[in-house]
Image (tube, rainbow, N blue to C red; front, side, top):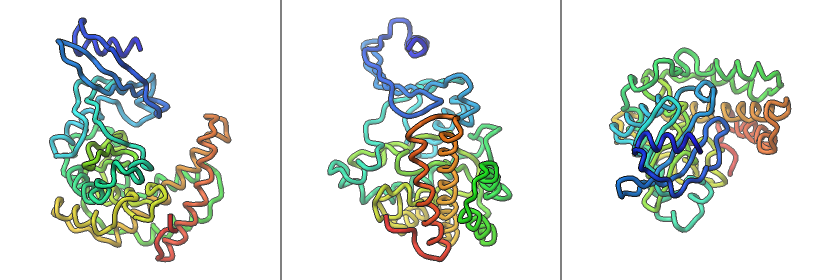
Length: 321
């Protein structure tokens, strides 16, 4: 709380007050606060993200770099919160009203009118992200898959020391069927249901930019379609839409055709990636890195991803949600 008030004082002046603040859930290495600031007779509804010591290394980059990305995103037409101020260890941004919990977005009556629009809005937002200049990325930002998009996750699986024959099979099949995409753009890296603020009118903001990198733009489209982000819905795009809605809107906004076979490859890669991440999270619990019921429970998702991969490798859709 002391750091929160220090930042508010630096940005708004010594006379600013904070009549409301509440830490938001989530984020082991970074704190997120909702706060109201009163300064100069005006009330500002804000969100503050704070690094803990060493968090920039753990999360993959500084919050200052993330703020640079978000400013570039706004300039490209991506809906994002407005940056009020930023430093190496914090971002202060406007608070956008809306919902981020996927099950509420997919089920609550308040978002019934928005749901049919979301897949197309995702296509438009992704087209805008992929127009962002690569120079907005930090100089040390990863270029995932510049030569081999499977290398990192094959290495991670090997380091875990756990036998997962389905993942090994998927790695081999994906390596043999690699698409020949040549476009390299800014890639959000975690564009999915759960990292979007949605209101009754649709997408209001895209969140969580810390995994942005240079890569194949279809990586973002494929990740959005991964079955895990459908949250029980049979609809393949985030649980709220169809492939044609996403692809049609993206092609119209980006001016680039989407190779559906390549999209299928990236969706399959996303299921594999999430499966390996589930193993990683479980091992953190089992090996004592972070004792957590939540991490332990993620272990049950490993077999779900293995089953989905087997179906996809046979040319079938992922198992019904």
